Image (cartoon, rainbow, N blue to C red; front, side, top):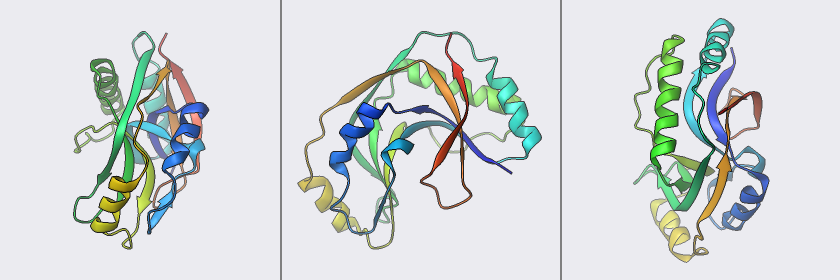
Length: 179
């Protein structure tokens, strides 16, 4: 069963600019810059026929103009038990609309509804127990200032991942252009 998700690939020049935030956080397992992406819809481990149905549904994505994605800061998921460090993405109306369409299309293909609220981001590191709330707070307060980064996307990518705890390597299985 493939583990799949749809997302927006982060271009190499933006991934390179994010390298400045790597390191200096005990307990961080850093994501390789070539695997940076903005997840639109996590599908999980799906049977091959379901994956084929999802791809068929995704081909019905409506035409749209390219959109600008802006990264505007660092954040963590997990609060008192930090589990991921990420670069936050400005939730533009165009991005929210694209994600909502992804949700409708995968549900039409038979995938269960997503229970989590969409929080657009680029995961930079998965955090282990050694990444205490205090260590994360120190990292965020003493690290380099975050200069906003923007890039333009004109396609959704269907990615597959190894069965693991996440973090790649990811493989682009299909690309679906906006127009």
